[in-house]
Image (cartoon, rainbow, N blue to C red; front, side, top):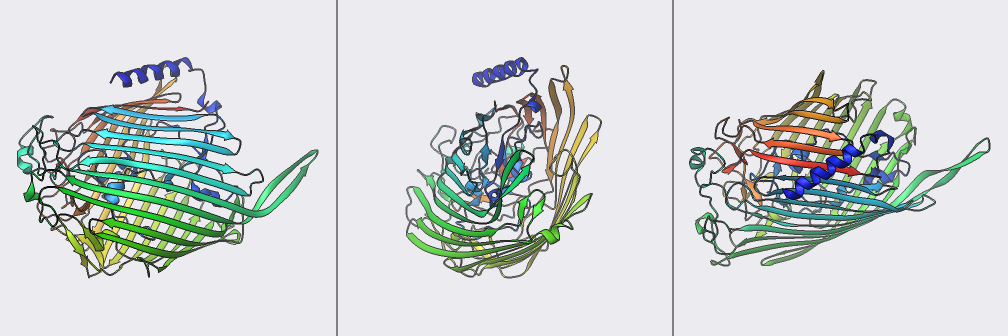
Length: 639
């Protein structure tokens, strides 16, 4: 807390001393995502320096809003909203353990003529530590380098619940002087561990207690006096990504009086990427003090040391002719043709396997003739012709239309996807299986209707958005109550709908997000039927309008359902039919304030603990964290 107090004092002092310094008078750094570089003249994005959602530091809240974890930040997690999207190509099947990873596809490539620093620091009870640090600067006019670091650590409220995650990303971008070549690089390290307690032995013992000290028995314990020191899931990931763009075109010379300027007009291009990734997972139970928790012992009855490793190299080359020229010009059409090769190695306790995947992707985007009428069609097709995923395909057609007031988007997709590797092949001390499941096939139809006003399009404080999806799935695979993968041989239907709308009443703001989900088979697809996430606050400028302040509440809620439970050995969420989770509001109280570029927040997480009943669970037998106080700061410096 001393460090945090010192940071607050220094921040306040600096912000007040520079109170006459206008943020709007200094240009904020800009950035591009990797896919933006397909168009040399594509508009750069400007960083968000607003106070909006400053208190939402948890990556899972920012990403999913409604999610399930094990009751502690950094623990395995999954979204509570059905998402049919699946990445093309080889997938290991450990997504729940990778939710907090930094990934190459999320890298921002900045243009910062002066050093840009972004610090976010949060501290709270139970040794919560959340630190996000970004440092970047242009080495030259066309070469930028940077480093992005994250540290998450939390002891948790219950026995054997600690999480500890370290993530580092080093990145760079270079553009040639003639605008014909771009080089992007990123190198990422993710590592950490999560203690596994297997959930409460008896929920009733927990519900009979009140207050912060609700220490009751858990299924997996260690040798510590309080049962600590139990099993852990450890993970480590290293990835290197490099992308090169070569552009073909010509220079257009413009003469205006005595001034002559040249603009490079991109006609086509080539992109080449190399990805090298290594994943390692280890489930470790040194003493096996809780043998009844495990269904079997195949290799060792004295300890469990289940390791899993994946190594993959992917080469991709893309020929492209983007329909986009600049903000006001488009070609007749744009095409993208990509060839991928994936080399994969998988190592388990008694299994070593190698694969070579070959995929081809084609994307077509009609251009100027459609764009004249504010219509933007797109078709995307991917097929795997060789390897573990041979025969996989995905085909998507989308149509976007911009009217003066409303934006419409219609999307239809059909996919066939091989099961993730660990669904078919798994070796551990407690579970063994070898499956040959059929591919999961799905059809998807989606519609988005959204307000299309300049103040609302990219502004979270305005506008409304309606989104509906119909998903038809065949040969769906899930993990049953015995923790084994099972293929459902009948067709499934899932309908999802969401509505978001922001309302303002003077200085009061209400941001609404609502979800509805329907499935025709609740035994296989486990989803809450209704969900909401609400932010209500009062906002006002204080101290001669130097400080912007917000005080309010965040409320999340979803209806009760038989949520899945997490199995620490398989690292999967599996079915259970004993307890229902939900019908419990989570209320967080916050106070945010912004002094120029410094943002401070004070947050009271789960303020309604013990006030809305004791049925407060993140998942089956995994209680929510008790109410706790958080202090946070975010400081952006770019001059």
